Length: 155
Image (tube, rainbow, N blue to C red; front, side):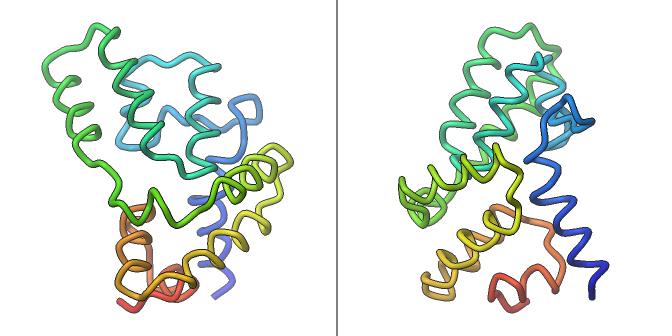
């Protein structure tokens, strides 16, 4: 069980929370969409910050803007369009308050991962089970049983 918790921290929270300076490469996320768009370090740090506060609409808008200005092959264009077509469900947009997002941003900057978990988990448990499942499935589509249980979602 501790192994799953450790892998969850590394994959879901720690990796997006650290900067490129410490070895994290946000460009490998989302089937390399960020790498395809040839984002620089500043842009990748912005992606990391948006992921940390779970503002997927702003992230999609940012990716779309970059997509419009980056020369791409047809295959690369198709990959980015697939990513852009996967918009967040409304529950993902609304389950965190503006105050929550401010806290998450501060926790992200300070690397307070347990605090990030606490805020997200608390808010998810305030949702009805079907909305919680929708949110968790969007944010962590490949979550294992341990992660699903942690967030109160049954397989």
